[in-house]
Image (cartoon, rainbow, N blue to C red; front, side, top):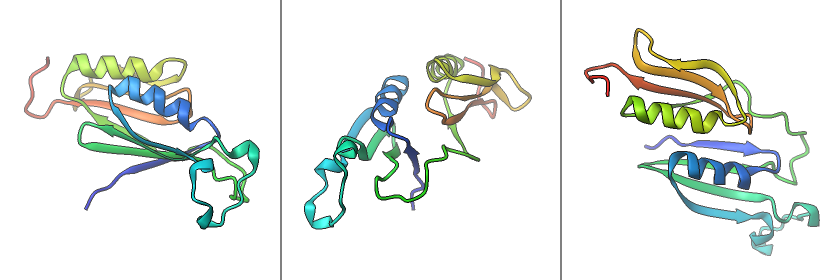
Length: 145
């Protein structure tokens, strides 16, 4: 079994995933628009929604982050990403600082990256796309690097 995170954006999925690709030094494995969906799916796509992202997949190490823009067929208004944070465990202080600072660019820091009783570094932020992140370099058995 594998558990993956799937985010829904309001028209800026492509921009978000290009940003995450740089932040994580990751590989964008897939990015398909609604215009690329086979007609056999029977979904009417308004012209203004044709370039919205139907599905994106980013490979971060051996993990997958997936997303799309809110479906043009969805009758409910987009209300943002609420009540969830993506927790990322890293392997060093340097990696924690680099990732935290990259994701915090034009975002909102909720808890500055700092040492805690459980972590060499822990911090929380909401990035410029409204996605909440927790960056953690656990103390565990590891020595500070």
